[in-house]
Length: 488
Image: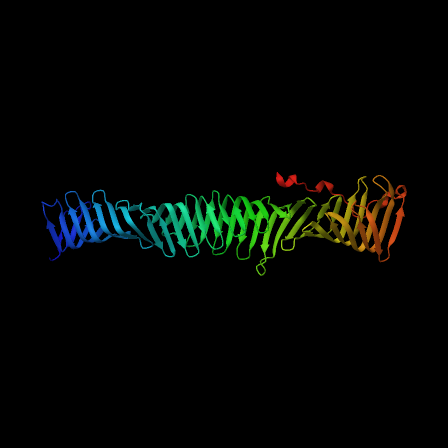
């Protein structure tokens, strides 16, 4: 039959038959016209093609079959194999091989309910969305054509070549390509897993923000904070509020209020009263400062150093310290203190321009004080034993000083005790180099003087008070950190 054009009215609410190969009306079968072959309908700016349809003119409804194609000008294109459409409510129910696109994305589902008036569609039987490299699935979803926005619920999964995303509730704008998380969400990539309960991800610019229980879990570390920003293209990230970084490889936990991370240079900065607690063979090493910078050597990844700046304080059971700055080399457990460092071990105070501390499996092993090194030990009766020189090397056994080597401008004042209450005298020494051996009771066992030594042994009562303290003597006991400072 030759295609014919039939109009049922001029109102935009009325459905019009534009053409069909055949029109059949059988009152006995039902109150509808059967449209067969190359069927075309129109309602306002909405056009529809199909293989065949039942047109209920009196109630302004269509039931369409086979290769259905619906289009709204500059809005969407919709395909399916079966359609129920109400021209008054403008509600369309499309099923079987449903496909919807707005030019930016493609949605495929088994059943879609679409409101032509509000330009809103929803599905409840599972849907797959493709938008360039992004592929998304959810059990339920709503699409707002005017704002180009999807609202997904229930088993939401987004797949990208670089990561996968799982969420219960997600908003996604097909133009801006921004995904907004409105519930528990996981983002997994080769390098880490990100979790949050609220946030957004610009899938085009690779910029993201996470909050509400947010954390990033890597192979050997985990970062938690109140909120985070991450710029994937540049590898730069920021964390804000109640930051906590846990490194299981180095057994260190760092807290603070702000942090930033450079992925390519492997550098992390942490401020806001940062505190680090590191496990050192079963003992806890506490560190605090104004700023931490954690650096991994990109050419040799096993070499990692933690830098601390301004108002550095350290507490460990066998050593306490303050300084302006510090470098902790995790690869060899060497700690370097810079600018006015002061260290304490038991009853000893050690100062110098720079101090290096060497640790082993049994704790403190060696300490080097450079440029005006000064060791002061206060004995049980309040007298100060002192050792001074350009460079001082102190060796430790079971956490106690067992030997001290002085190199350059060596000076020593030592109160020799016969027992815990009686002194045999005071040894006042000046020489280029000296080696002092100390026993387990913290008493000097032997002293070896080298390079033109000058030594005077005074009875205690005749020791001049003017010699009781070597030049630049300062006792800083009030600055010695306690464990409580790191726990409050």
